[in-house]
Length: 262
View 1 (tube, helix red, strand yellow):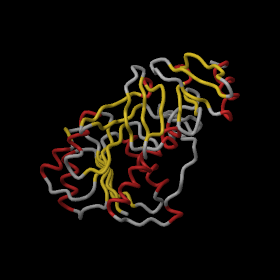
View 2 (cartoon, rainbow, N blue to C red; view 1 turned 90 degrees about the vertical axis):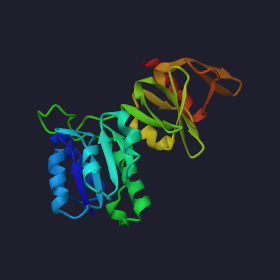
View 3 (cartoon, rainbow, N blue to C red; view 1 turned 180 degrees about the vertical axis):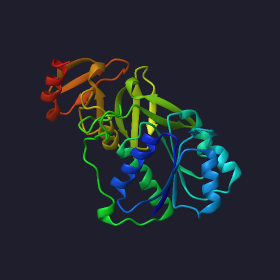
View 4 (cartoon, rainbow, N blue to C red; view 1 turned 180 degrees about the horizontal axis):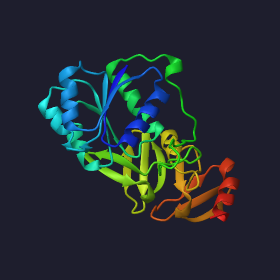
């Protein structure tokens, strides 16, 4: 699988390459290009790659200029810190839009989309499943997270009626299983639908801040208004959420301990 990375931040490009190699060890990174000019020159001299990872803001302008000046037919996964370009990105041949900092589960999901849309076949050993703990890779003295530090998701990009809205993780107080995806609830009580499963979202969130109270629900611990026994079950109330939530019996004891430790 031939992959081209167009990214002007060397650390980000190197980190992305390492993450890709974790998921697809046989992937061939053709080049890491930091500029529009360099990318156009590369496309003039090489055949199309199987997949392109493309940052929006490059050192000499917006990468959409590359797509305007050359007929790029390869699938694209955008990787950027800016959410406002999402709608424009999906108007071209983009299969996903990842907000930085990118975590392994986000990248795995994007590559799974690529596999589904293109029919690209992966051998089992080359498509590993990741553990529930996400570990950030970094170099000594680089200012990045060290080998023992965890890198948690900072925001979600939610699409509703064609409008893409970034939802900060700091504003999320709960996540519920909803149809085949998940529904986030923010501090104002607004509900945001995602196509990711609750299990995927739980893996991306800091377990020091969030707790799974049942198979259907994950909550922010500091958003708990009260917890009380009601008959044979325990009910929980979150600030900003009108209805009470039922806590699974298997999680009651652990939840009490977590609340006491806040």
